[in-house]
Image (cartoon, rainbow, N blue to C red; front, side):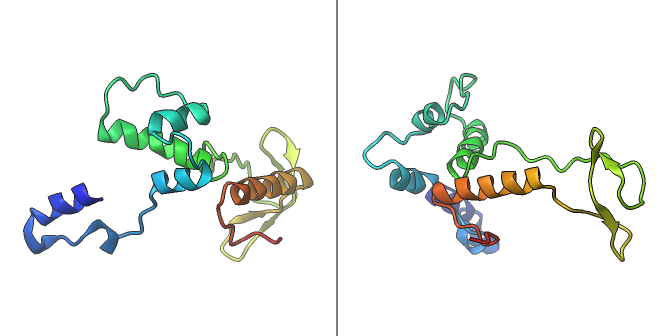
Length: 144
């Protein structure tokens, strides 16, 4: 952050410090709290979380930040991807969704379909929240 703030400062008064625009999470501080007394370099964290960094032959800000994003997701509960893709073949209630799985669907006042989670999805959601909390995260939407 100091490096970025220094570079922004060189541009004059046009920009403030990074922290004035957004919140910053120090993953090294997180890792030291989670794994006290252990190595917490980016390479060590990649090895600990089985994240492939073999394509990293030199340190570079862009590549390191992409790898660190994967490490951060692993540190905060194991999510490794986010997909919001769903296939929908119509707009009526109780339609088939995603490879024939029947789901309860209702159409809200804006005309958008609202899906009801099934038991398997509710269980997967609860397991994800537990993993996030176990990793030291705080789940504001947790019911427990």
